[in-house]
Image (tube, rainbow, N blue to C red; front, side):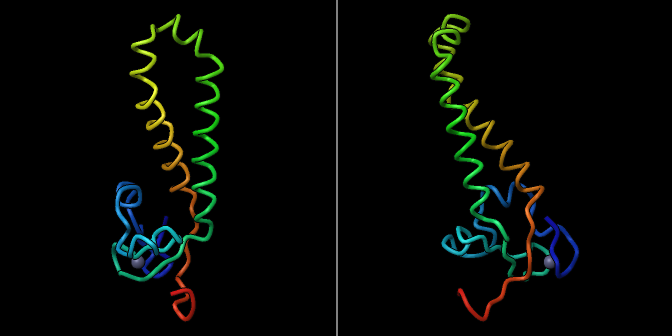
Length: 115
Ligand SMILES: [Zn+2]
């Protein structure tokens, strides 16, 4: 995601995934972030899409795991199947976030309203 103001990357993926991006937590939930280079307040155009896709991926993953529980358990054993459940889910969510992060569109935030 490139900052429309200074043309530099507004946030690294790790910053995007693990911090509130220089704004309050509430603002960050609404899709706001502050450019890491020039501190311009920016807004992600489609913040809900990320949540929606992550939720969809999670639901699909859990469904597949439940549907194929018998096969997975007989193939890996119940202990490994249980051990892999959460780390695999995290890995998939992480990859999804990364793909989304690369394709997000950001604009300069209009600070006259929605503050
Ligand atoms: Zn910038």
